[in-house]
Structures are given as structure tokens and as C-alpha cells.
Length: 200
Image 1 (tube, rainbow, N blue to C red):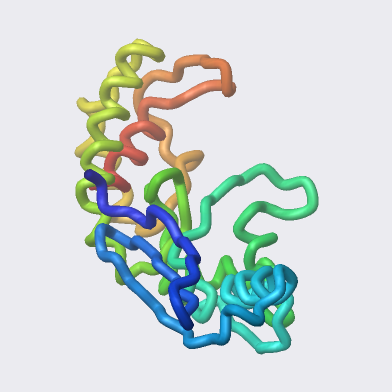
Image 2: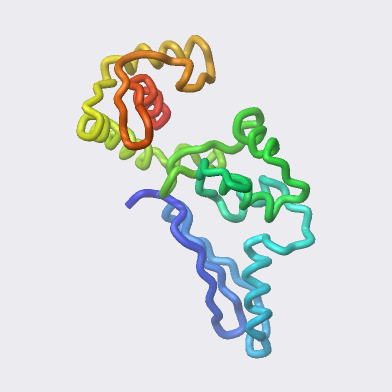
């Protein structure tokens, strides 16, 4: 079973509210003593809303949010904002999208990679996703051959040397190998190789 953030659950037991979260195969249990017999539905809703850091007067930071919810699914679709921006905007005091960019690409305490889907999570947890990355790397080989008839393994070393020489670089700047059209547009062999390397 892959190590990943699976679920967060809330239950009521005797005089306690129990928050159970399963992260990377580790079950964490937080217990809050309450007089649950006197709780209304509204109070229960407010408890969960506050636990998830929404509608709070606290001045949360991006680090606070990731310490609590661990992982945010990355979705590049942008109508009024991307999914990570909307999740953080609802929780972080005076959030600006540049703050997320800085956390990812300047301060680098966050990283984007595969959890259950493409997500943003804490950089220090990167090693825990080794098995996930291995699976994604292998599936990228199969997909490139099966759906695109695209060979990229012969240029992996060349792409690696380009990144090693130039540092962080986007896929548009690397033009190696063939290009194949697909339902999403087109895919370059060098882009597949770069994605493969990012998961190893």
C-alpha cells in the first residue's frame, strides 16, 4: 500500500471528540474533552470548520496550514484561482498567490509531487513518497509507449546533464527527441524524460 495522506475522520466517544487522521500509514489520534451531550448540530459543524482552519480569527500562515492538513491537491485550472490558492486563501491571513510561489520555488519548504494525485506537500516529507514516485516513473514509460508511441529513455541522460548544468529549468527550454500529438495537445520526448527524472 502506498504511503499517503488517506483520511481525516471525526467521531464522538463518551466525553471526547476524537480526530483520527491517517498520514503516510501512521494513524494519529487527537482527543478533545467536551460535554458532548450538550452539543448542538451547529456546534459540531463549527468544531469541524474550526479544526480545518476555516472561518477562524487566527492569523494562520502557510506553514500552519500544511502542518495541519498535510497535502493540497494541485490543479492548474484557474477560473478565479487555482485549487491550492483557493484552499490557502480561505485559511491564511492576507494570502497572496506570490506567497505560495515563494514557499515552493524560493524558500522551498513546500514541493509539488505525487501523493494520491499531483499535490503540494512539505519538502521534508518528500522521502516518504519514494514508492509512489517509483510507480509513477514506471507508468510514464508504459504510457509513453502505449499511448504516444514515444521513446524517451535514450535521452534521459542528456536531459539530466542539461538540468545539472543549468539548474532549475522548465520543459519548454529543453528540445530533445520527438514530439507526439495527443488529446491534450502535444508531448515532447524531453518533457516525458524530465517528468521521469523528477520522480526518481
